[in-house]
Length: 273
Image 1 (cartoon, rainbow, N blue to C red):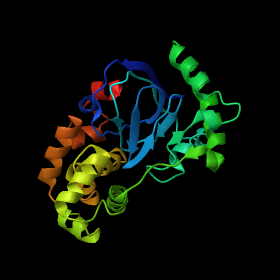
Image 2: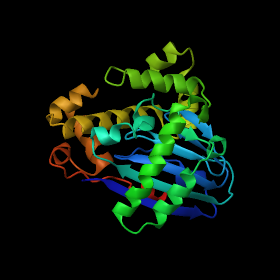
Image 3: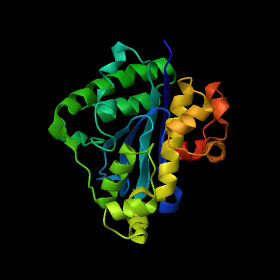
Image 4: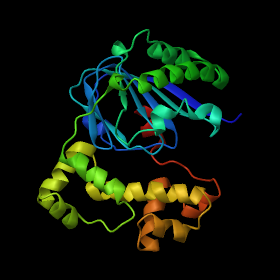
């Protein structure tokens, strides 16, 4: 059975927003257990207020970043995993995939009766090999599934106009998108749109659109599509622009992705999150 599980416990004594400002995504599912600090978490523009013991979950390619609220020490457990795409695991992964992006990401264990999720994550961290880690990941996913099916146990995020803009972009990512048309659609100035988008996501609107399209193109490449086709179907109108952006972001050419030679840019930064 092929699977991937990586886990780490991190503590940042004096966190700064500059160090955690990067909006990012992963090729794996991610679990973040917030142990201490003063921060919020943004997922696809939806913001969640974190409390010690809270658990955030993100599926593959779900954009997220941390919002530091003070310099209180920030401690967290990070687990990234990829399980086989088989019926045996499909139900356990329901909380990750059977929901809209940026919604139902936060679980507050204090509200869950007989909850052991944080305990399972700590045991997973201590496990020395991947199969032992899997033995602790599976009961965690089982309890997470039960919590997900009890809809009232999922904390709802804070939303604003930037969230509406992101939802629109996600629904029209392969179409023509411009700052002017978005500003007109949402009845705000371009400067104001840029400002609220940066505050909500930690990145510019155009960078968000570009990276979303690059991630979509990479999925198509991994499914066997030709680079020119993948670029066009992902919203890029010029292949040269796509090629440069892809190579800059992923540190590899589009053809390398087809061959399985993709390397992930910002690997160390993502591990530190």
